Length: 270
Image 1 (cartoon, rainbow, N blue to C red):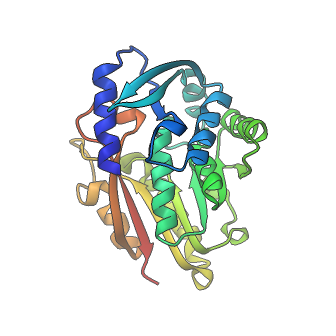
Image 2: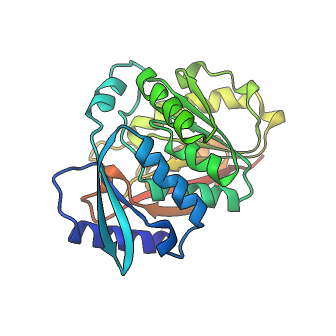
């Protein structure tokens, strides 16, 4: 499924020309067989209720009717950069990529998701429509307000916590059958990840089947500290994690690159 989505993305970029970097497509629900129709309908609702997106256009990819959504994140990108402990400005994961990530998490047996740096809430939105208990932690108030507005208008319920992830009390979360998504790339997300790990160690006795999903990279910078396991090798070793799955999916920050974003599903060994 992941490779098929990548192929569709390549066709989308070839067939659909736009100067807008924030653009993506969703198949028309009743004209495809990839996803459950009801889930796709709710994913369209997310884009229609999300004020980031202001333009829709019909198109066909591999004989499959789709809708392209274009948007502008400048307001939120700038707002998310103003915090000292914000390790990466807001750039959205593709909606279909978010849906696939949640489906993988569910297939791996997780029942709860916590998204650190939840942006406009697309991961926790997808988690909720798939049936997982979903919590987003986001430092930027404007993005939290957007998440809550989407939840209210779509009637898709999830919890949004407006907080610095370093000050979160992890003891109030369900730490069984839980996957934690860290929405930051290796070089910028290293400090965030180790800080979160130090908090989680306090509740090791409560943790059962707990994992972390990390956003990796195929492109290393000259000064990158870690060039193993898509940029996360040292953290995985230091944390007592094991890799259980890696999939590469489209994202807004790799839109014009030949390689996609690798997402690493890991599980604590204890």
